[in-house]
Length: 536
Image (cartoon, rainbow, N blue to C red):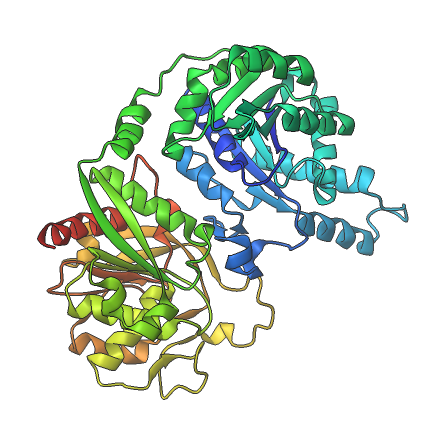
C-alpha cells in the first residue's frame, strides 16, 4: 500500500516547504523507495499560467504540458521523480471539477458542500498522483500556512487521509520557525507552540517538526518543543540556514529523519550515506576552484523566484565546472536607458531568458547585439531566442523593421509570428505550445557538439514561432538553424559560427537540469564563460 506524507507550514510563509519536501524525497529515494511529490495550492486560479511573474514567480512546465508551481522544480532537481499534471492541484482546479460535475447532474441533486465533496476531490487527486506514478511514498506539500482560510479544505483532506488509510500509512510533517530575538538574546519556541496548537485544532497532530532556525537548538529547547507540541524529542528536526539548499538532505539525514519516517511506516530498507551527493554536489558547491560573473538580463529581475530554474541551472553548471557563478541581475529596461556597455562590460557571459509582452524587449535586443559583437558567450532561452533572430535580422541582414507580431501586429518583417492554428485562440490559459517536444539537431553544429546526439526532447512554453520565410536570408548572412521540430519544421535552435559560444533555443532547458547532472547547454555556457573570464 502507498504511504503518504503531508507537509504543512506554520508561523510565516517562505520557510522552504518545497525544499524540505524535496529533501525528504531525496533521502527516502536514496533508501531505495520510489517517490512521488504533489503540491496543493490554495489560490483560486486554475493554474499559474496567466499569473504575473512578479506575483507568483516562475511557472514550471512538466513533460505532459501542465503549467505548475515552481516547487515542482525543486522536486525534480532533488529526486528522480517525474512530475506530471497530477503533481499540482489548485483550489481553482478542485472547485472547477466539482462544479462541472454538479452542472452535469452527477451528484443526483444533492447539496454540494466543502465536506465531503471538495475534500473528496482533493483526496482523489492525491490518489491519482499515487496511482499514475506507482510510487511507494507520496509526499504532499500543502501551500500557505496553517490557519489560512483558503488552505483549510486541503488541511481537512489531509486529516481525513489518516482515517482512510490507517495510522501507519499517513504521516504529518510540520515546518515551523524558531525565531532568535536579538534584544533578549534568546530562542523563542512560542510561535511554534501556537502553530502546532492551530494545527491540532483542525485535527492534525504532527508526527515530525522541522524547525527553521538561525541558531542551534539545545537539548533543553528540543525537550521543551517536544513537551508542549506533543512530538517525540528525536522527531524535532533542526533546519538551520544553509550555504546551499543542496545541503538540506544531508542535514536531515544526519538527524536520522529517514529512519523516523520509515519507523512510522513500519518499512525496512537498505542503509545509505548520500556520499555521492555530499562529494559531487555539496562539497563542489561550497568549495569551488574558479569564480565568474554572468549577467542575466530579463524583465522580471525584481523577483528572485521569477527565474528560479535558470539560477539553479547556472548553479548546477558551476558545480560541474568547479566554479562559483555570480549572478549580475540586469533589468532589460535599464539597458534601454543606459546602454549595454554600462551594465555588461565586466561580465564573462550573458543569458537572456523568456518572458511575455513588449516591455524591455529593445533592451534584450541591445544586450544580444552587445554579446554577439563583443564575443561574449551568450545563451538565449525562449523569448531570448526570438530576440536573437530579430537582432540578427536587423543588424546583419538589413531588415531594420524586423520584429515579432507579439509586439507589432503589422510588422513589415514579421521574423517571429503566430502559427496559423494559434490565431483564433481567445483564452490565454493553457493554449500555448506546452510540454515536451522532440528536436532534431543538425550534424556539425555547436548544438550537436553540446548535446552529443541527434535527437533530444525539451519542454516548451510559448505561442510565437520563427517565421520560416526568412530562413534562407538569415542563413545566407551567417545564422545557423541547428535544431528543428521535425513534424512541423519549426525552428528550435539557432547559433552563430566563429563566436566563443552563441546559442539560443525556443524551449526551456532550465526545467531539465539537476545539481548532479547539469544541463548540457548551461554546462558548456559556463565552460565557455570561464575561458572568457580568464582573459578579463
